[in-house]
Amino acid sequence: MNPEREGRTIFLNWLPATAASLMLSACAATSTPPSTELDTALRDITGQNGRACVRVSDISGYGAPDDSTVSVSSKFRKHYLMITRFRCPELATSLGAAFSGRFTEFCGGRDSILAGGRSCPIQSVFEFDSRQAAFEALDAAEQETRAKREKTEQ
Image (tube, rainbow, N blue to C red; front, side):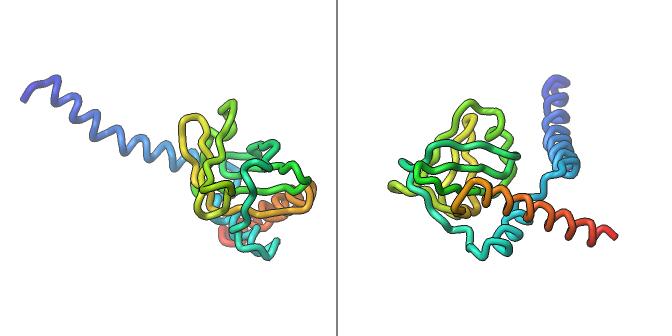
Protein backbone atom coordinates (compact mmCIF):
# COMPACT_ATOMS: atom_id res chain seq x y z
CA MET A 1 0.00 0.00 0.00
CA ASN A 2 1.19 3.50 -0.78
CA PRO A 3 2.47 5.13 2.50
CA GLU A 4 1.08 8.52 1.49
CA ARG A 5 -2.37 7.04 0.88
CA GLU A 6 -2.20 5.04 4.11
CA GLY A 7 -1.47 8.27 6.03
CA ARG A 8 -4.56 9.94 4.52
CA THR A 9 -6.70 6.95 5.43
CA ILE A 10 -5.57 7.09 9.05
CA PHE A 11 -6.14 10.85 9.14
CA LEU A 12 -9.61 10.52 7.64
CA ASN A 13 -10.53 7.78 10.12
CA TRP A 14 -9.26 9.90 13.01
CA LEU A 15 -10.81 13.21 11.93
CA PRO A 16 -14.55 12.41 12.47
CA ALA A 17 -13.94 10.99 15.95
CA THR A 18 -11.88 14.00 16.97
CA ALA A 19 -14.38 16.47 15.57
CA ALA A 20 -17.28 14.75 17.34
CA SER A 21 -15.36 14.74 20.60
CA LEU A 22 -14.59 18.46 20.33
CA MET A 23 -18.22 19.30 19.54
CA LEU A 24 -19.50 17.31 22.50
CA SER A 25 -17.04 18.93 24.88
CA ALA A 26 -17.95 22.39 23.55
CA CYS A 27 -21.64 21.71 24.18
CA ALA A 28 -20.97 20.46 27.68
CA ALA A 29 -18.91 23.55 28.52
CA THR A 30 -21.58 26.09 27.59
CA SER A 31 -23.89 27.56 30.21
CA THR A 32 -26.72 28.11 27.75
CA PRO A 33 -29.40 25.43 28.00
CA PRO A 34 -29.80 23.18 24.96
CA SER A 35 -32.40 24.51 22.54
CA THR A 36 -34.85 21.65 23.19
CA GLU A 37 -34.88 22.38 26.93
CA LEU A 38 -35.27 26.11 26.31
CA ASP A 39 -38.07 25.47 23.83
CA THR A 40 -39.95 23.30 26.33
CA ALA A 41 -39.53 25.85 29.10
CA LEU A 42 -40.77 28.72 26.89
CA ARG A 43 -43.80 26.66 25.86
CA ASP A 44 -44.59 26.05 29.56
CA ILE A 45 -44.06 29.68 30.57
CA THR A 46 -45.90 31.34 27.67
CA GLY A 47 -48.62 28.77 26.98
CA GLN A 48 -47.75 29.11 23.28
CA ASN A 49 -47.04 26.20 20.95
CA GLY A 50 -44.00 27.81 19.29
CA ARG A 51 -45.72 28.09 15.90
CA ALA A 52 -46.15 31.87 15.86
CA CYS A 53 -45.47 33.65 12.57
CA VAL A 54 -44.08 37.07 11.70
CA ARG A 55 -44.38 38.75 8.33
CA VAL A 56 -40.90 39.03 6.86
CA SER A 57 -41.60 42.62 5.75
CA ASP A 58 -42.44 43.55 9.39
CA ILE A 59 -39.02 42.54 10.78
CA SER A 60 -37.15 45.69 11.79
CA GLY A 61 -34.17 44.17 13.59
CA TYR A 62 -32.74 41.10 15.21
CA GLY A 63 -30.07 39.98 17.65
CA ALA A 64 -28.68 36.68 18.88
CA PRO A 65 -28.43 36.51 22.69
CA ASP A 66 -26.75 33.10 22.31
CA ASP A 67 -26.13 30.48 19.63
CA SER A 68 -29.62 28.98 19.72
CA THR A 69 -31.86 32.01 20.33
CA VAL A 70 -32.77 34.89 18.03
CA SER A 71 -34.54 38.01 19.27
CA VAL A 72 -36.57 39.75 16.56
CA SER A 73 -38.28 43.15 16.66
CA SER A 74 -41.20 44.00 14.44
CA LYS A 75 -42.21 47.39 13.05
CA PHE A 76 -45.45 47.16 15.03
CA ARG A 77 -43.83 46.91 18.49
CA LYS A 78 -44.28 43.15 18.74
CA HIS A 79 -41.25 41.08 19.70
CA TYR A 80 -40.40 37.48 18.87
CA LEU A 81 -38.05 34.88 20.30
CA MET A 82 -36.92 32.22 17.86
CA ILE A 83 -35.28 29.02 19.05
CA THR A 84 -33.08 27.18 16.55
CA ARG A 85 -33.23 23.42 16.18
CA PHE A 86 -29.44 23.17 16.74
CA ARG A 87 -26.76 25.49 18.01
CA CYS A 88 -25.86 28.00 15.31
CA PRO A 89 -22.75 30.06 16.22
CA GLU A 90 -22.94 31.87 12.87
CA LEU A 91 -25.88 33.91 14.20
CA ALA A 92 -23.62 35.78 16.61
CA THR A 93 -20.65 36.16 14.27
CA SER A 94 -22.16 37.04 10.89
CA LEU A 95 -22.73 40.63 9.84
CA GLY A 96 -26.25 39.91 8.63
CA ALA A 97 -28.90 37.27 8.30
CA ALA A 98 -31.70 36.42 5.91
CA PHE A 99 -35.04 35.18 7.17
CA SER A 100 -36.01 32.48 4.69
CA GLY A 101 -39.75 31.99 5.07
CA ARG A 102 -42.36 30.51 2.81
CA PHE A 103 -44.41 33.13 1.04
CA THR A 104 -44.44 36.33 3.12
CA GLU A 105 -44.35 34.84 6.63
CA PHE A 106 -41.64 33.35 8.80
CA CYS A 107 -42.97 30.66 11.17
CA GLY A 108 -41.72 28.30 13.85
CA GLY A 109 -41.20 24.69 12.88
CA ARG A 110 -40.85 25.20 9.15
CA ASP A 111 -38.50 28.06 8.24
CA SER A 112 -34.77 28.88 8.55
CA ILE A 113 -32.44 31.78 9.14
CA LEU A 114 -29.47 32.02 6.80
CA ALA A 115 -26.36 33.35 8.57
CA GLY A 116 -22.69 33.09 7.71
CA GLY A 117 -23.39 30.80 4.77
CA ARG A 118 -25.30 28.33 6.96
CA SER A 119 -28.99 27.56 7.22
CA CYS A 120 -30.20 27.48 10.82
CA PRO A 121 -33.64 25.79 11.03
CA ILE A 122 -36.05 27.43 13.47
CA GLN A 123 -37.72 25.05 15.89
CA SER A 124 -40.07 27.56 17.51
CA VAL A 125 -41.23 31.16 17.33
CA PHE A 126 -42.82 32.83 20.37
CA GLU A 127 -44.67 36.16 20.13
CA PHE A 128 -44.61 38.85 22.85
CA ASP A 129 -46.18 42.28 23.28
CA SER A 130 -42.81 43.88 24.07
CA ARG A 131 -39.07 43.27 24.09
CA GLN A 132 -39.10 43.40 27.88
CA ALA A 133 -41.74 40.66 28.12
CA ALA A 134 -39.74 38.50 25.70
CA PHE A 135 -36.53 38.79 27.70
CA GLU A 136 -38.32 38.22 31.01
CA ALA A 137 -39.71 34.98 29.58
CA LEU A 138 -36.28 34.01 28.22
CA ASP A 139 -34.65 34.65 31.62
CA ALA A 140 -37.33 32.60 33.36
CA ALA A 141 -36.91 29.74 30.85
CA GLU A 142 -33.12 29.71 31.33
CA GLN A 143 -33.54 29.66 35.13
CA GLU A 144 -36.09 26.84 34.89
CA THR A 145 -33.86 24.68 32.70
CA ARG A 146 -30.82 25.25 34.93
CA ALA A 147 -32.84 24.34 38.02
CA LYS A 148 -34.06 21.12 36.36
CA ARG A 149 -30.50 20.20 35.33
CA GLU A 150 -29.13 20.84 38.82
CA LYS A 151 -31.90 18.73 40.32
CA THR A 152 -31.15 15.78 38.03
CA GLU A 153 -27.40 16.06 38.71
CA GLN A 154 -27.93 15.64 42.45
